[in-house]
Amino acid sequence: METKICTKCKNEFPASKDYFNAQKNGKYGLRSVCKKCCKKYYSNRHRENYKKEHGHYYVKEIKKTKTCSRCGNEFPLNDTYFFKKVIKQELANGEIAVYYGYRHLCKKCHAAVTLEKKRKKRYKELGCTESGYKAAYIEQQRFKKIKFKELANVDDKTRAKILRVFRKYGKMFYSEEDYDQHLIEVRKQASLKHRKYDYGNADFITPKMSSEKYMLNLTNARMAQSLGMSVKDVPEEIIETKRLTIKLKRELGLTHSSIKERNIKN
Image 1 (cartoon, rainbow, N blue to C red):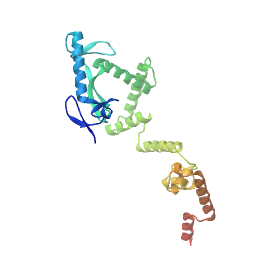
Image 2: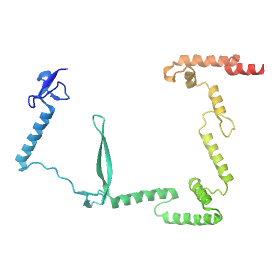
Image 3: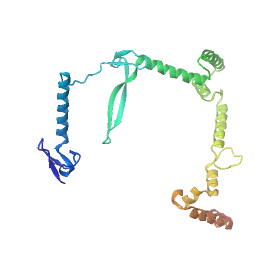
Image 4: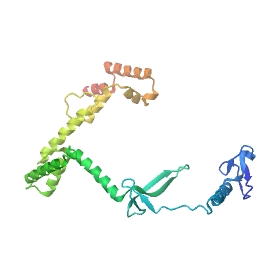
C-alpha cells in the first residue's frame, strides 16, 4: 500500500481518505497535511478569531438551571428537581454512545401528568367521564361491599382468587366447577374464532383433526412443502401437476394411508 508523509508533523500514514482529506490537484488526490494537523490548525484559527472579536477565548458555559416545559418555572439542574434519562445514539462506526441527561418536566409536573394518565385509564375501566367518576366509584365500592359479605365465610386465599377472576372476567365464581366451566366456554369461543377449516359441530380441535384437515386440503403451501420448497420458488404449473397427481392417487387408492389400511385388513 502506498504511503504519504504529512508536511506538518512529518509522520508517515497510508495514502487513504482515513488519514488525509481529499484534494483534486494533490498527490494521490489527497491533501499534503494529515487530518489531525488540519483539525488542530483550524481549531486554533477559530479560537484566535473569536478572541479578536470578543477579547477573550471561547469558554463553554455549563448550564446550572433548567426550565420546566409544563409549568415554566426554573429550577437547579440536579436530581432533586428533575428525573434523569438515558440517551442512546448509534455512531457512524456502528458503536452505541450512551449519554445521560434530565427530563423536560420537573418532578412535580411529572407526577401530575402521571396522575392524569392514571385517571384517564380509570375512567375507561369504569366506563364513565370525569364528571361521572364519583358516582361510578361509589357504585363500584357498594358492589364490592355486597360481594365481600357473600365471601365472608371464605378463606383469604380463595377470596383473593375469586376477586382476581372477577376483575379479569367481570363475573363471580364461588366454586372451582363454575370457574372451570367458564374457562371451557372461553376456549370454545376462541376455537370457533380462529378456525381455518370447517370442523363441523366439534367444540375443540385436536391435533389429529387438524392434521387430517391439513392433509385433505391441497393448498399451494401444502404442495410446495411436499416438494421440499417454498411457494415462491415453485412455478404454478408444477404445483397444479402435483395437486392433480395426489387427487388421482386418492381416487385409485394408491396413497400411503390407503395401502396401510388394506394391509391391516388383510
